[in-house]
Length: 68
Image 1: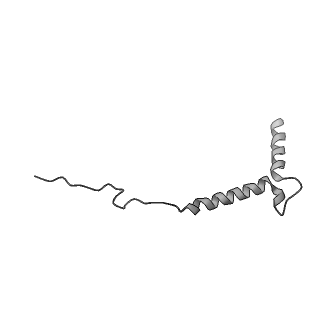
Image 2 (image 1 turned 90 degrees about the vertical axis):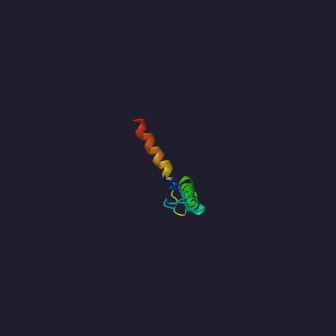
Image 3 (image 1 turned 180 degrees about the horizontal axis):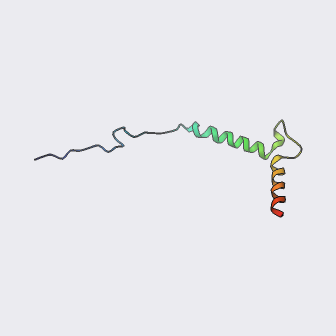
């Protein structure tokens, strides 16, 4: 008479890959994105600002194209 063998599930064997990111691996790109977004929305804070913001100029062009 054979006895049943007990096998461990695949997660418990260590064969799976455990991918965990540190908190800063997500926080730093988000912080950089927000900083660049704020510079785009308020270009007066940037050193190389022009008279008319690029976003406003782009929105005016899109408005002209959709009005046709």
